Length: 447
Image (cartoon, rainbow, N blue to C red; front, side, top):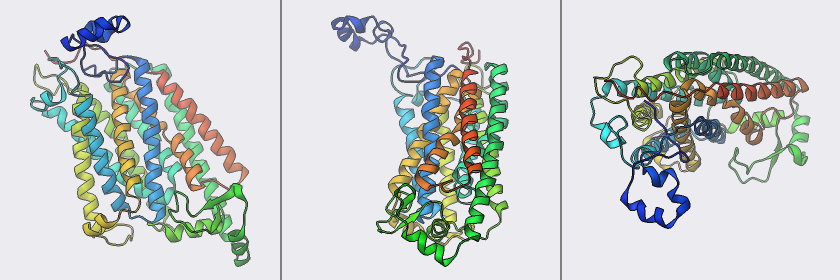
């Protein structure tokens, strides 16, 4: 089904209430709004789809930084994820009841509420399956951020998503994307992944050298340092404190103090834990977009005859329900039976923990709207091209450097690798978006 959403591209049927306004405003009367009326907001053009993808890229690259910030402040990840899940689901409801309900539906493009009563359960199950794997992936990555780091976790998970998910979407979309452009883009992404792994390795060696050279004399000098360009003040977003003490970002003191105050303790733990969490998250992420693709386009012809495909809004609603339910069940369980030696908590403690709650709620909104925009763009231009948002490590790396002092006081080798990785990601985003095609609108429902 050709689901076309986005604020700037409207087409519609006449409504009497617009006729008076159109007669008063000649410039408006010539527009498609007055000549054809109003229906659901739907992305029609390649430009609109790319705009959706760029916004999704920013949103999906920012919310992990907020979760990382709260974990580094010492807030339990179970508390953070419960808050995040609430607003993430709220974003899906908002999209469904606005974009999905504005204007008149058609038999092959019903409005959100009308479609809830239809016999479309095969597609609903695909959508809900996508929500399950996304929830598991986000939950795994939340813990992986502490062990592997924000930037590298995003690089590895994005690479797995592109290699598996984008390839699946290309064939599910009946090859509407330009293969000669799409797969070189995937190749650029893989090169950036190897560079990202090299950045992690080089930075880990830098940190190991800092800690091995650490002495009490160095500690005294580092704490008293007043170089403004390298200071990370304890009242900043990451530390969430109003102390007047300053610590140089990237020093051994900084690393030790971070370990002391963060919720997930990582010193002395095997690196395999972080890698296992990261690869698990990547595998989950690689499956949710193809599942959503099947839910909205029914490539396997599972819907009964005459039943229209799920609109992107209805599919996103069911997708978000399962994502929300899994998140709530698992995180309430983790309150009483925590993993990775985290302290036990309770629902009462969670409700009383308001420190940083606003940031967790914001993260949920960003993720919810980011996923919605990705699906909107993918429905118009092809989900393989929409997977360009998996270049979100570009954004996450920016926040990692700006907020958390990642890579500060690192070696020249690390900086060169970091710059090369970011450059390759920029190339990858451009190439994947250039591969976008346009979905035919001739198969919106089964005859």
